Amino acid sequence: MQNEQRIMLIDRNKAWWRVLLRFQRAIMFISVVSVILLISSGAVMRYVFKMDFYGIEDVTLVVAFWLYFIGGAYGSYSKNHVSAEVIPNYMKNKKSRNIVLIIKTVMTATLNWIFTYWAFMLLMWGFERFGRTATLGIPLVIPQSALFIGMLLMSFYTTIYAIEDIMQFMKNNQTDLIMKKEVL
Image (cartoon, rainbow, N blue to C red):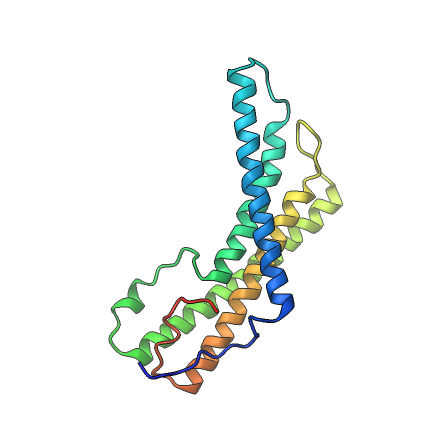
C-alpha cells in the first residue's frame, strides 16, 4: 500500500464532533447502568422480597430504546456495525473492490436516510396521538425520539463516510484506505 492519507470531510478533532461522541458515550453508559440496575432490582424484589416491581417494563423499555439506537449510532460512527463484506474481501481487483464498497456505503447511507424519515414520521405521529405506556403512562415520544435521534446520527455518519470514500476513490482508485475500518 502506498503511503496515503485518509481524506476526511470533517475534522474529527473539532470540539462539536468530540462533544457529540461524549454525548453518545454518556447516554450509552447511563443506559447500560440503568438497564442493569432495573433488571437486577426487579429480580431482587421479585425473588428475594416476593414483591412486584410495578412498571419496571415501562422504564426498561424507554431506557433500552435509548441504549439500542444511540449504541447503533455509535456503531455507525466507529464502523463496528454488522456488515456483510464477503464479496469485497475475495475480490482481487482493488478498483472493482472499491467500487463495490462505495456502492455499499452509498446504499447504506440512502437506506439510513429513508429510515430516518420514517422515524421522524413516527415521532410526529407520536406527538399527534401522544400515546403512553400501559403501566406508568410514560409518553411514547420518549423512546420514539431515541429512534429518530439514533437514526439521524447513523445517517449523518454513514453519509460522511460515503462522501469520504467517494473522494478517496476519485483521488486514487487503487487505494486500500476505503477497505480499512479504522476511525480517526
